[in-house]
Image: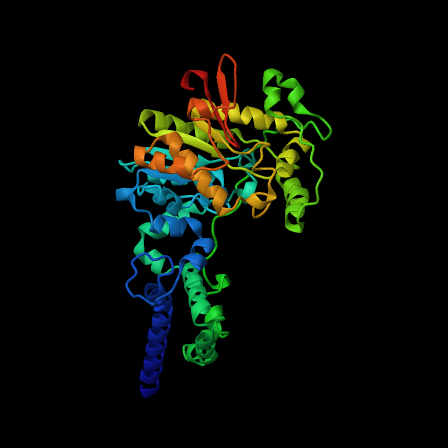
Length: 428
């Protein structure tokens, strides 16, 4: 009888200890709170650098000031470069950048559906480029549903093992030496709860390993559309078949030695981008849905095509998508105004304006924000400020800013300095 009673006590104590160990991620996440869900305790940690990069949507959704936001920016890392503070410097305090590094059209669309219930929303700006319209782009990644779920369910957020991993990374960044001392004694503590069966004997890093949980990994693997655009092949110059529009796309003839990083992206990354590119009608339908909603709800929709260096632009032509790149702009302008920075001009010829072949520097980003602000006419003081600080990027908004104009029965393209605006003729 005593033996049975003793065994029962040991079992109960072991169960209780395992239970508290199971709650450890909850307490850990509540204390560290890497995505600043509630910020119950101030540990003087700069979490943005680690946490945002690990899961952009979760960080952005947790920090979304819905009540004060009337301008929203969506897109990938190029749109993310149009940072909140650049808009705020112009006086647009209601602007919120909801763009993510590596964002897909799936993520842009799901974020739009998340924010469209905001009654204050007046302007929607989407950074966009042709490359994103392949369902296999970034493996069809969509981190937004996971972010919304964790944002809306407090317990799931605090009990999530992925959140624990990022919490630990934040601690490691500031308290690396102290953490080593803790993890050195942790295995003996865990073994007291018979942690061998959980395979958690290698310290805190092992405790939050994805192999030991179901919620660590993000959704993956959305199949590609069977639709295939025509591939014409290298050596063909598409502009000859565009009639009057061909003047917008003069052949790129530049011979220079690129920095190593730039050169690798132009040769290898571009090949990965375009060699197996499939244009998706499904993803295009998402944009149509966004545009339809904006029109019905009186929300101004503006597409921004970010700049890349001219060698990267040429790679689109090399793989036979020059004509599609042109049609892409025309069809975008059916849905909303298009501010286009990605063509041959003094800025895209200047490597000093870029951090790599895809990404522009912060100075160019500020100029772009200023020109977009002028276009959407958010308020008069902001546009005046943007006008004062502009330099060599001038969008053709005023008549005196227009250096070239092209049109047909349907479309209108106005060109300024390092900036074009595409629109339907009746809207131009």
